[in-house]
Amino acid sequence: MQSEVSAPPRVNGGFLVFVAVVCAAIFAVNYARYGFAQDTFLWTIRTVVKQAFLFFTLSYIASPLHQWFPTRVSAFLMRHRATTGAAFAVSQLTAGACATTIWLNWPEIIHAISQPVERVLGVMVFVWIFIMLITSHRAAIDLLGRRLWSGIHTYGMIVIWIAYLLDYGRRTIEWSPYYGIFTGALLVILLLRGGLLLRRIVAPSSPARL
Ligand code: HEM
Image 1 (cartoon, rainbow, N blue to C red):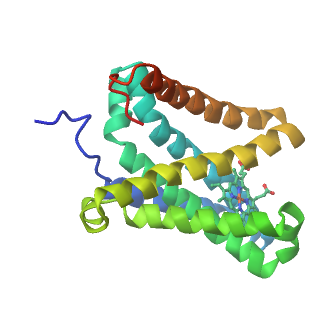
Image 2 (cartoon, rainbow, N blue to C red):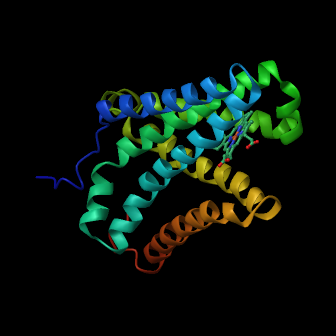
């Protein structure tokens, strides 16, 4: 019989609705302050991306943390990693909707902060996040096959990690050391996951699972 931690994770739909309501509330507060203006969308992005980042970190750190330092907290994160992953996607896609609105109404803002190639890659990452969200259930695993499903989700998380590192890394260097909190969290994940990979190379019989 599978333990609760090793059982395939399930997404808690109620929690996802709660996260969507929080995103809508953040937008509503900004709309009440600024109306239909760029600041509404910029401040919503700045807030919901941080929320997305928190959920991403909780989801992506769960497995390596549990393998290196198994505690009740790591077991809890393991059990709920599919839910935190989906909560990340809902929050980040809310930011994507705000970015699209800015792009359509005030394109000069998007042109000022990104190069064309970054915009193409950014849109591709959003599409990938959307695919990950709509395939976050058992029926999708059965439909796609475990190999394809695992590929989409495993490489998706790596791509998102890189996208965050590029954005927060640049902000840490060019804007403020405060963004180092986010860059630091990404490097901790890298350390834990890289360590597991190394352990698996050095001792192939170890039970490491990424
Ligand atoms: C074409 C696609 C994208 C567009 C148009 C876009 C647009 C924006 C805009 C307008 C901001 C606010 C800038 C400001 O603070 O003044 C922002 C912030 C940010 N975006 Fe994107 N973005 C895109 C894709 C992505 C992707 C794929 C990720 C990562 C998964 C990402 C991560 C971030 C982060 C980390 C911030 C900083 C949030 C903070 O203040 O903490 N973006 N983006």
